[in-house]
Length: 85
Image 1 (cartoon, one colour):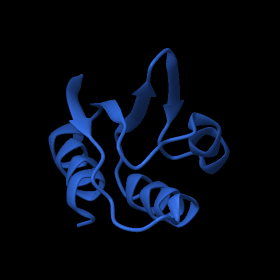
Image 2: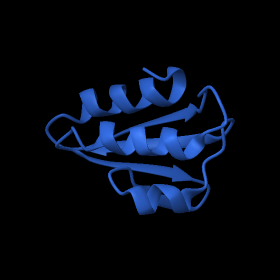
Image 3: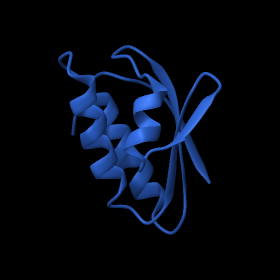
């Protein structure tokens, strides 16, 4: 399992749209991907789970990935959350 701590740096105020795009991106990877904010940890592939996380545009998160493509998954999710890539 790989983990990274990041600060979100997404543009705009449409967090629901960013969350939907994040779930689509996470779903492309085989690895299990989780995002933790404070004491809440949710599956990044679950739109309902991600909506309950209540992410903010300036939040600090822990991203974890475990599986065959965990390095690629962690880099992809981290890249999206820090620069919108």
